Length: 164
Image (cartoon, rainbow, N blue to C red):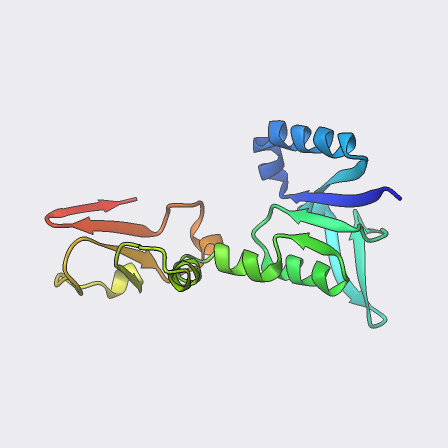
């Protein structure tokens, strides 16, 4: 039986990643997988009469076998998992990997050497360094609130400061 899946993107990201999406859809077809691009803004999720429900453009739809969620929205991942849909990446992975502090702590558990890091907000920094240089200051805010990768960090070393 052919598996069905959704590749979920926000509209603006789907435009930016059009070539990758086309490649993904073509590769799925070669594997006999029915993969459909679903635009997040057109997908509604909810609970109706105590049952998890999905709608696309306000029309009820059958749930897919799996979903590749390319949005940064752990609630969506969790919702789909609650429907027994296999989700790439899991809600837990999405939550950790899209939060700078949680990612750093997860990598520490693996004993991967990392530069010393302070988790704070820029308004709570003082002119006195909290530890010897070099170190990184990472915003305590989650990635989905601060923007794209690399934003919300300051790298400090000796007499050098670089706001990214």
